Image (cartoon, rainbow, N blue to C red; front, side):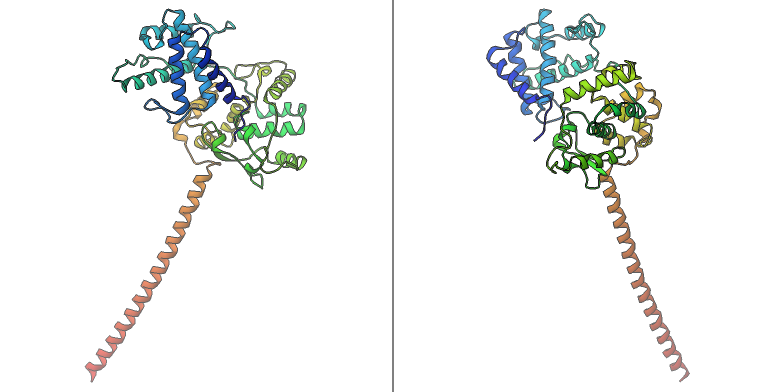
Length: 394
């Protein structure tokens, strides 16, 4: 069972039940029906567009999809388009252009900074629309081909290991251990962190496993490099925790509030290199701050290993955070080397070494047999030669 700190499954099911009975405020019946059909297919993994990841979407993903598409559908309706399936290329381009320019703003008056995410979700919807209509022999033009999916430059809280150590004394010993664990492992917090069990940590505290079923991307076994000693003391203090219980039990909202309060006091609201002030620190900021720490340290020439440690499938996010901090030139695809945490590759290397040693031993045995045969042949030849010589003399 995966612990969901945001209760995404309940949120989604409640929304779906309400929508099926009373519809969606601000949307026409046509758009409401269209949205539900799309979301239902994404829930079960049907009619996924070619090139997209197959399979059912998570509740977290479904919630993100519905929220963004409801906003886009409502905005289109405000512009006189009451059936989003009839949207024209010029109309959708105009909508996203207005979001980027600030003509369309958030409820709080701010300009949208992640328009690329809205574009990607609309493209997913439109490609689904193409696919379901193709099954009915209805051709739908792809109006999304020229849409810009690039990410705008967001800001985030960035802190160094030294700055982390300045904050630690203001937290309990158990909280300090959790903070070091987050920074060390660059685990997704709170979602992946909340699901780590005692049994996921090696008995010698050298490694921790993030299981496939609890990860956003893929499971991984990573080495503990900074928090091992703190974790040892933590487990002594909490010796009653059973192996099948969670390593850390906490309230994400409470801990995020405490992080903001402490960091604001310690650093007096200063801005960080990531663009945001320390006063906006959250658990998730340990992930990219830790990634930047490792990028300039143990993983300087091991980008592949750092991607594995963080559970990234491509360089996009790692590049984003580190470029923001002036590390652009040092991150190259040519830099891909086997790293600290490639446990599977390490096992493969060990297997190849064993095979090499076996082949060497086998070849040595073959050579010994060959030499024995050669010596035997030489002995027989000399004996025969000697016997022939004696016959000639006789």
